[in-house]
Image (tube, rainbow, N blue to C red; front, side):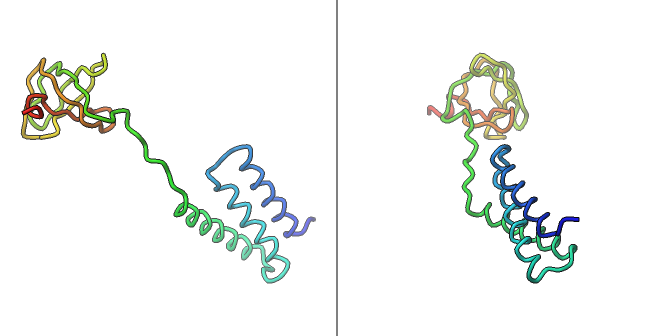
Length: 144
């Protein structure tokens, strides 16, 4: 039966190589590094297998959490960068959704000011998006 040190070395090498073929945002790589550290420690101070597993889990978790602090995740850009004009298809009652024609498609929309209602066939500015719902403001309100 192979020693636990050899198993940790193989597992660590395998996890590090796995990162090359299946990118996992460095999670597999960091788990592999943790396994290599445990392989080194298993020859010196970690004699019991359960203790080696606990140390590997702890090191993997700490490395992943620390790496997330130093990685910058690009913010998700919405396709609506600036206020763009659309047209209401239905009335948008105050605080409730309606329909807007935007870029040739009908979208669910609600007014940014929940106290305003917007009549049908009125031009609106699309100021944002929440999921599949557009946030709009009446053109006449913003132009004045």
